[in-house]
Structures are given as C-alpha cells and as structure tokens.
Amino acid sequence: MSPHTGSPAAVAPQYLCFRRAPRPIALHSNDGDVRYAAFAFLPAPERVAEVRRAVTSVLAYWEVDEDVQDVAVLAVSELATNAVLHAAASTTITVLVEVASYLHVAVRDGTKQLPVRKDPRGTDNENGRGLAIVEALCSEWGTTVYSDGTKSVWANFPLPRGASA
Image 1 (tube, rainbow, N blue to C red):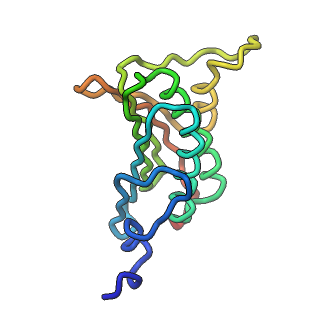
Image 2: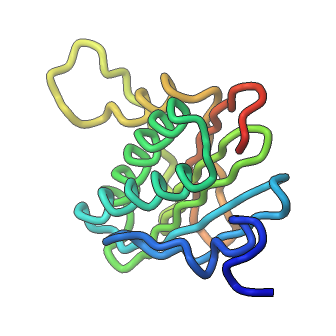
C-alpha cells in the first residue's frame, strides 16, 4: 500500500506537518475511537504560541468542532503559560491532547506544586486569572500528581453530539 493511501489517521504521524510549532512526540488514532497527540517544549514564554499552533493544527486535522477547538486552545494556552511561569527552567513541559467521547487536554510540568485558582474579581492584576478562565471554558478540570514528582493540570470539553472527531 502506498504511504498516501488509507485513512488520514493512518498517515498522520508521517505527514502531519506543523509550521514553527513543536513536532508531536506521539500521534495516534485507532479507527476513531481514541486519538491523541503529545508535544514537548521547553518552558519559555515564546513557546506558548507554538503550542497553540500545534494544538490548533491537530484539532483541525481531526475535524474537531471549531467552537470546541477555540475554547480548548485558549485553555491549553492558559495551562501552558502557568507551566512556563512555575516550572523549573530545565524542565520539559508536555501537552497531551486526547479525543474520545470528549476532548481532554493536559499540560504536565516538572513541579509537584499544585495550582491555586485565585478569585480574579476586584483586582486590577493581570496575573492569576488563568485557572478561572479554564474553569469557565471546560466541563471539568483537575490536577494529577505523579510518583516522579511531576503533575499535570487537565481540562475536559464536551463534543457536540454526532461530532466527527
């Protein structure tokens, strides 16, 4: 079989290209049941825009509903920004995007410091609003702590009924 035949998901790891964005360290699909992609990046502020582009590309490729794409990319941007601000400089940050019956995004960094959702009301400070934004956008969010001393902060988004993703 030619590498250009078969389902798009079958050729995605070889031919999905991101301009100026992190290349996926994993991209998988098993006939539409579950799809996931993972990206690694260093904790630098300029990398957050690259992560947004990469996640946008994957979600568009998987034909995820555009409204869901928009809110998920905003949430990933907020979570990645938090990771950049709070992770150790030598740590690799990993972004996981998974589509099943819902869209799951997670940002894993090298610190076990748990995020604190601040009340953004009544403050002129532009910092500290990220988790409040994520909470407003998603159906649920949380934190997973791993035995290696790292953690991920994740968010889930419902997919419209009958969505192709």
